[in-house]
Length: 153
Image 1 (cartoon, rainbow, N blue to C red):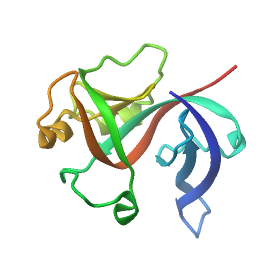
Image 2: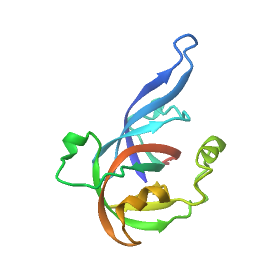
Image 3: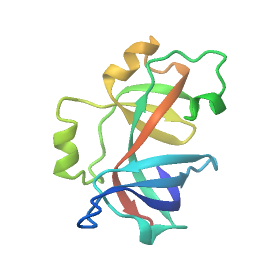
């Protein structure tokens, strides 16, 4: 998925050594919607601000059904997408071992397509929504985590 990196900031660091543990990224999707992305590797994309990159995200969904609560009250985006079911990650993505180990308990990822963008999710996240493959539904996205990225040439 293509994302424009609008801003990158340090999230947490060790003040004694200045070692950076992770970053937050303000990214803009193709539909111009901005999302806050968590970079815990860290990739450190500060040099990529105002540039477009190709990204692979893991999205954490809320287990709370969407009701009349507005997006402003929730502070996290409400999205509408199609549940794709099981999803094979393309070989173009080189996912670091650290990430593979972190998600080792997830034997296979599932995915949701939101407009032209595809987000990976845990199969256990979808259980709260009672949707079947191909169905459209609304959901609350709690976190977007950067799993891998490639420059756009």
